[in-house]
Length: 325
Ligand SMILES: Cc1ncc(C[n+]2csc(CCOP(=O)(O)OP(=O)(O)O)c2C)c(N)n1
Ligand SMILES: [Mg+2]
Image (tube, rainbow, N blue to C red; front, top):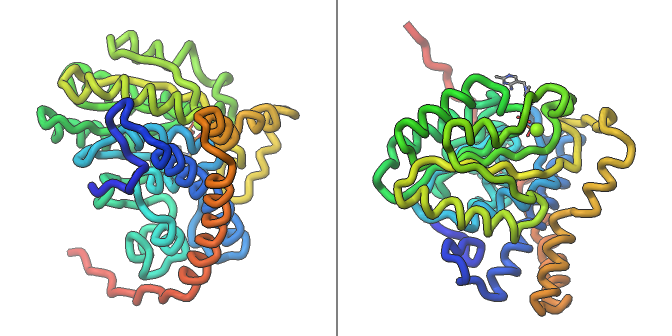
């Protein structure tokens, strides 16, 4: 797994100004790429469906910043942000969604099936719970190596059979597995509270898996939590579980306007937009506005280029469908 310069620093206390700014740039890139993807989707340029990550950036970026080469990650269909947080550049991601040969999977995977082995991404799984099962298998292979597997999944996934089976399996076999539940309050159009008995972390605790809740809108908090909980997993202590409280700023998928959400809820969460939270923190750390504004401008320029180049790239040739006996 090759690291993106500055975005990964898996040792606590090793951060410098360039590292903080790189975190900001990566979170902003994720947000703006998702805006672009939505625009392209509504223009009919994106094949298949999309599930955008806007609002949840601090989870993927905070956790990815604490990972090392050799770690493996499985995520859900809401995976564009995870792929970019791990180090995939936006251009091959956007080209993939446009179905072009320059896409990370040659234009044949699309939004829900992205794989990026170079950065440790095993896959984005359209089947709810698929990411947990894939990461559990990876953790089995990684046992004793010092590397960890990370399973990202949503709150709705915590009500699935896979969830309980994999937690149990990981605990009994002392697997190096980090469960990261991204609790955004909804599974499709259903409020999580209406369909979930008790607390999610208590489900892990009852299996004696250490479990903690973190503010998923604050990249400082997610990074600190990741550094703290992953260290013992790496050392062989077995699985750990984190529930990141977060919110998606857009609908579930495609052009869902999210009308099922109570009035004012979105605005309240937007007050804690992870980009604002990070910007404020950067200024507290003494970083001036100028380099941050420069990042904003450079991201906009990058977006224009990636759209132009993506749309100009060729589609893959159709291949013969193999015959099965
Ligand atoms: C096994 C399975 N059942 C149902 C679905 C349909 N489905 C797609 S997304 C989704 C909601 C999942 O919610 P959550 O786990 O909270 O993730 P979020 O979309 O909020 O990130 C459902 C039920 C599916 N893809 N796979
Ligand atoms: Mg959810």
